Amino acid sequence: MDPREEDFFTAIEIVAGILAIIISYFLITIIRHQRRNLHLHKAKILAEITTLENERRRIASDLHDELGPLLSAVKLQITNLETEIPHDVKLIEKSSGHIDDIIQKLREISNNLMPNTLLRKGLKVAIEDSISRVKDVYPLNITLEFPADVVMSQDKEINLYRVIQEIIHNTIKHAHAKNLRLIFSHEKDLIILRTDDDGIGFNYEQKTKMAGGLGLLNLQSRTEVMGGEFTYSSEKGTGTRYLFEIPA
Image (cartoon, rainbow, N blue to C red; front, side, top):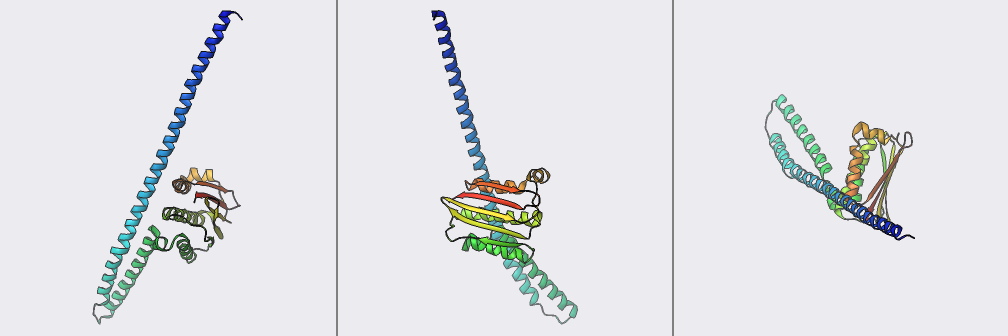
């Protein structure tokens, strides 16, 4: 080969090597940037959810520890009023009944914000309690499978409880289902939650465009905070299925 040709090909190899190094550098930089953005995104979601849960805990505590006793004291004062006027007696009884209703509603709101059962007795009992309250109001049959080997931290219990709340809410509001199954299992190093209903199903892309997809975003955010993966499937007339895989 002519020396000039050798020099030419050597120059091409050098240029190609330099370009490869530059391209590799940019690829590595892009990957690092994406990983950093993903880490920041997860950190932001975690901070938002932590702030939300702390605020819920504070409001629930205020409702339970301050407004509840205050209303009870007001009721006691009203019932201790002495009068023989029939109109006033009826008014006192009616006011006392209204206060009982308000106290009951405050307890329900406080429990929805941060269930004491969840904090004291764990996720399984909290879900069972929630299912019991739903059955009293809505014609939805909910079954729960929760083996004894499904154990997790309280933070994950709170997040999974919110996930269950969102699924039950979606099923009641959108699916028009008669049955909903919640199935927990412990497989290898994962806590698995599978859910399915026999509702009408729907097109998620269409639903996301119409309603903003906040329900799905909430489920996705909660799953990301727990370091897990979330998938779903639904079609018109075939019901809806969710799958959550959470590191144990």
